[in-house]
Amino acid sequence: MKFNGRSDRVIAAGQNETLKVTIATRGRSGSFSRNIMVTTNDPANARVKLVCEAQVLAAVRKSPKSASFGRLDRKAGPKDKTISLTRGDAGPIKPELAGPIPKGVTASIEEIEAGERYALNVTVDAAQSNGPVKGNLKIRTGVAESPETSIRVYATVPARVEAVPRTFSVPRDKSVDQQVPVNFRWSDGRPDKLVAATPNDPNLEALVEEVDGRQRVVLRVPAGYRPTGGRHFVTVTTDDESFKSFQVPIRYAGIGRQFRPQPVTRKPGASKRRATVGAAATRSMTGRGASTKAGNAKQPAGQPSEKSPEPPASPSP
Image (cartoon, rainbow, N blue to C red; front, side):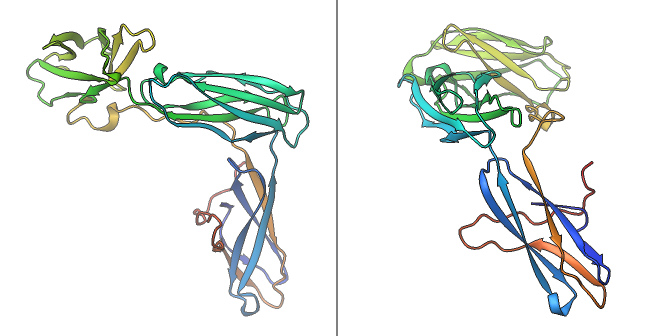
């Protein structure tokens, strides 16, 4: 819950004040309420309880709300789940898949009753992924008021191949050429063949070698090399048709976090469903002025608690 404007205010004698709060509705559906306790210096109204109520409307109702497959064995073969999509609060729907589908996932939408009910069929093939399967299936709803929704897909899958150690750790010394090896551990007891290794920095070189019947990749770093900004990694190619390539990060001693993978940021203008609820403090403080301070009420047992009010901020334009 977020307060718009100052949380401590002065109400002149005989006047009233409106508190505006913003409640994030992402992941919510149906009706809900939250309490706000306003403390004042008026002995007759030391604590004033305000109730914020809202009804979150949804163009499409989903059951279940996500496609969680839990832990999958790579040898188990494809696994299926069905998500029910039904008409929500804004008229007939016409759901269609939109955007890229996560690797190792296939999906399709089947019409059950036109405009009313559909089935989203999701399949995860553990053999097609090296590690966890996670992502969102974007769905166009066919409803103008809420044109898009999404379904989260998640499965834990053992890595087909694991680098040991997990990164190429380049020592601090730059006065001599460096050779940094990484070995590989294959799942299922069936190693495939490493075909090539290519750093994304052309100033580096990576070679596939075989030692005692096992392959490894050696990263060669020339003396005096100074890494540039951004994420550095080596792409390793295999002869496995279901798992053609993967990346092994490069870390430089003493460099710090600047070469770690950059976090994904939300694009400007990305929408979030939010409900702005106006809570009017209409009690008249007659006879003299009164100062107020708003705070979240403690939630009853069994109900989720809201965060404490954030520092004063200007209303959004």
